[in-house]
Image (cartoon, rainbow, N blue to C red; front, side, top):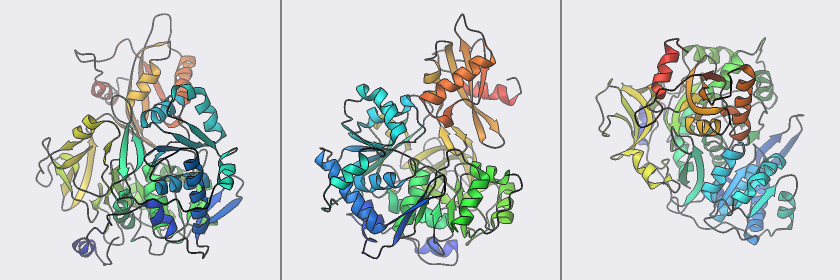
Length: 534
């Protein structure tokens, strides 16, 4: 997507969007490479290091068959197809099948608990879900609450037999670039998570940012890997789909628990050339005792989700042999700012420059750009190919996201000499280990516990994770604070929402600071922690 050039200025001056009116992700990332040559698309590695390899020809055949299998069961264009499985060939096949059918993929994180799954499946009206045995067991417990869900395809039972019994007939439909393709749920500060609906143009919209952050990708690219789950926009559209757009194979290996030594080993054994590593993964690799990253073949490392800092950049140069490129975006409008060491040295404290094609500014509360150096909202001007179509079934929330022609990211920053600096959030979303976590669902989960009367969830600073989730709880009568209750509340959230959302700290209070209308003043709680009042 990016034109050739030796500098940021030269490339930005030449750039223009080239997105066809009729466009389908599956045709772009798979079918155009499936020419009978057996070109490698995917390496799937298991925990015991055993591997399975799939070509683009394989993926075209398998996803066509799975699309036909779903069609035979009544799944139609526009239906939502949930993909509730880790990095795997099943996840890849399901995404390609949904896109080629004109369905809307709904990726779900494999560690979600039942409350989180039930809301997303119910809110999206998913007609089919692809999962594994663990996911199927969770869904079985909530199936009665999901009247729209007609089919559950389990990787260990009926997923593959359905493919084997299906027709090879081509299933690709004609879609416009603006036709809906995927709903990715994102956390907010209040209420339930919102489903960011994207069109097929989300992929070409991502390409300039991926190419810039990955040192003019696909230059020198031989294999791409990320520990980020494909359920998130970072794993799916910063790695998997852009790689396949360029015909670059992807390595699928999702650790149950990220391990720095295992990551070094994986990168070296497979001679991975390009990777997206969230800042927390980088911090864990840096802290690995006695790490000797010998034999690495890295040509590019990109990171996003949190600010890296000069120390981590210096460590990357010394240990990984590359300058880590930081990028910025969010689920609604991703990869709009980036660094690119090939073009310019990263500036200390800055999160990058506007990716060519994206009009990014710092604006005031009314959506008016402010002078250089003046704090304001980091915002993206519409129209923009990577920008979402809107929140699924929530026109009001969609409208609130904009001020005039600018989409507000919810982050505050400044713009100086073309470089953007992040100042902080203007909402209560917690950034922990690269995840954006909304306090609302966690608070809702906590107050369902019989011991909890009120709950407030905030982020408190943490050296490794940037922030950790902290719950401040007011107990009902008859319950007493204690370590046993802390563990019980943590498990309550961990099993019902997600493992990455449980409160790593639980504090007990007699009351919570609230407004006259009963809204929790989280800012006041954060100020107490900052002041050391606990």
